[in-house]
Image (cartoon, rainbow, N blue to C red; front, top):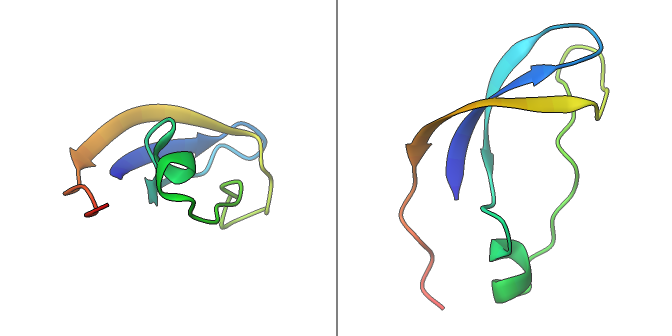
Length: 59
């Protein structure tokens, strides 16, 4: 997992969220859902930058 700074392309709100790296949810068969803006609920989200890397889960 990584912590990313994200930006809503609908309302412009910026926020941080823990998200799976590409393929990580499938590798461990974990449920996942799209990231939503906490202000307007939109799923139109753009990555701004990776804030920090979190330790990997044990398989």
